[in-house]
Length: 171
Image (cartoon, rainbow, N blue to C red; front, side, top):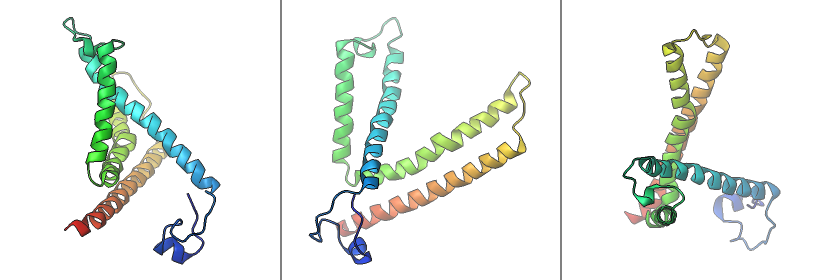
C-alpha cells in the first residue's frame, strides 16, 4: 500500500516502522480493491462447484433436504461450509504460503494446461470435420504454455522459499 522512501526502508523496515505517516498510493489501493474483488468472485466460483456436487445428489428421488437448493437445511449447510473454510484458514499455520503453492500449480493447470489439452484432444476426436488449428495459433499456444510453466515454477519456488523461511525459526 505504501511505496518505500529509500532502498533502506524497502529492504529493512515496513513503512509504518519508520514513523513516517504516508497516504496509501493510488496503485496500492486499486490493487487491494482488485484482489478483494477477485477473492469474492473466485471464492463464489469455487463454492459453486462444491455446492453443485451436493445438489447433483439432490436430483435423485431419495434426495436429502440438505442437498436441494433453496431449502433451509441447504442454506445452513452453505453457512457451515463457509465457516469451516474460514476456520481451516485460521487453523493452518502459514496458510497464505500453502495456498500460494497450491495456486501456483492449480492456476496454471486450470487456466492453461487442461483447456489446451482438452481442446487439442477434442479436435483430434471430433466426428465432424473441424478446421485444424493453424501454425500461428499453435505458436501462440506454445508461448502461453511457456509462460504458464514459468509462472508455475517461479511461483512454487518463491512460495516454498517463503514457507521454509517462516518455518525455519520453529526448527
